[in-house]
Image 1 (cartoon, rainbow over the protein chains, first blue to last red):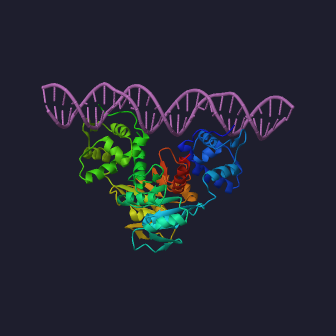
Image 2 (cartoon, rainbow over the protein chains, first blue to last red):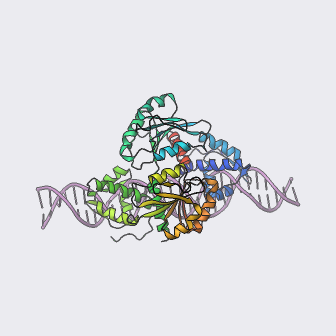
Image 3 (tube, helix red, strand yellow):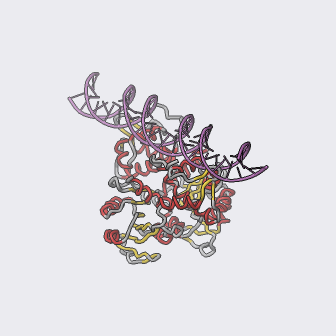
Length: 212
Length: 212
DNA sequence: CCATTTTTGTTAATTAAATCACATTTATAG
DNA sequence: CTATAAATGTGATTTAATTAACAAAAATGG
């Protein structure tokens, strides 16, 4: 009955944002409770996987009843730290960076791009969505005066390692890169890659191969 | 020595685009051969994983020698169908859609957004990067006259299921969605989700949890 | 208050992926 | 041509994730 003390599997953690978002939607629509079977239908995850995932975070459900949505939101929200704004820096304000900045996680009140940087003097000084684009070397100081929890980079591959080295020197430990080439970082620094081209190629590939 | 006839693991297929891109880079820089250990260093994948992955596609290497880069490119390129242009349709030309269209996979000559659609009358008729934005109901006809291998959707969650139903009716079988809510589709249709918010949340989350 | 139904949480079983370990093959140097 | 070194390809093992199966717990309905 006590919460697990086993290591929480990576995949269970990866699913937390989906759970959280879906539960918030349900709450917004007036739902108060949910059972794993219903939730599974909605997000297309096996109920058993959901129950196991939830169990890592405590004894959250009641037999014959299900889960209290508000309670789950409370617990998962704490883990995701939705109550403190997570400041993000954007590096590279080209087309994609611009789109990200204009959008700025509007749907997610706790994620916010608080500063943006680019190498191109033409865009430095421009203000988008209340954020003024700066030269990258301002980041060091910025990261001391304001909390920057992570960096989103649209910097192209050839310049990325250099930028990352600088980020590491600034004390940044979380980086999301839209450039696919892997970079070398110390063990305490986490880089996540989001490779649009591979995603599309895999989409087409898996469709092709699926019929075999 | 004959190529495997076992089912190729999903993860091995997912890595093909990375292999392909990296090998092309190496070839561009004049390299002719590579061993799994070197390649592993570059893309940060265990050599053993690379060798096993490669083995699914034939007997591609030579003991004591390594792999012939041109040969690998040839084989993987065929699987990825890099020689035929893969036409894509973009649905939803907001900020993100616009960025994707402006970029249009310039680095990847075989991926190309060939048509774009939106519901907003203000953007219909506008031309970006030689693609004129149309009303979504034009897609049915377009998909008959030109090959559309897949769809990229930036349509928001609340409208997405409806759009997907229409796409399915048009015969589309591959969809990449930037909206996270899962939709229901027939088994032969593949939807891949790319959830930016979850990616960022997981980035921060995994950093937080890693120290434990 | 008891019997029945529902639904959880978890042990056990399964499936899938990654890695180890090494026999085999090929290249290379003498 | 032979011996040595290098590197592959793959059975065997390990690790991780998912799913099945079910006992225990709580709710519901008479």
